[in-house]
Image 1: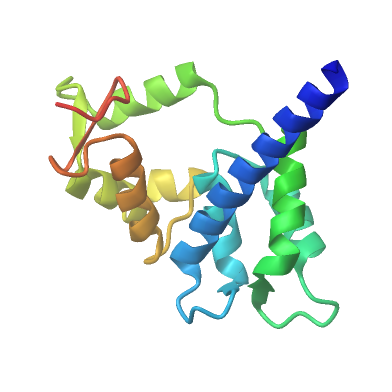
Image 2: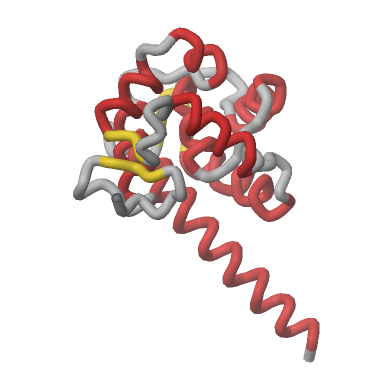
Length: 166
């Protein structure tokens, strides 16, 4: 009986991961053909709450690439690999205290929030952040999604507390 509950819990977790992975993948599937540019994979993975090192990211890409690399990743290859990564918690999120310190650096006026424009500027233009998190043009979509998930999209702000409501 306990085994049935464990299996049901795992099946629910897998279904939830599949939904999140599909949603994240579709943001970058510009042609709606179940493929994304290989250069977007890191952004997709990070949008799922994983922060792999460059080496881990390289390994993940190698797992999902075709034998003859095309520059594109197919969803049907990405889904099982990313599901396994999430289930096994192979890529840990950045600890909350580090995120808080980073937020404080970006909010020197101590307002307790960043505007969407500030976040986009920091993520796409600031050289010091580019080293930590290289961001390309399509990452603006992810930034907008971050704002939505934090609850601040309507206001165009994200709060330090993460509630998004300022």
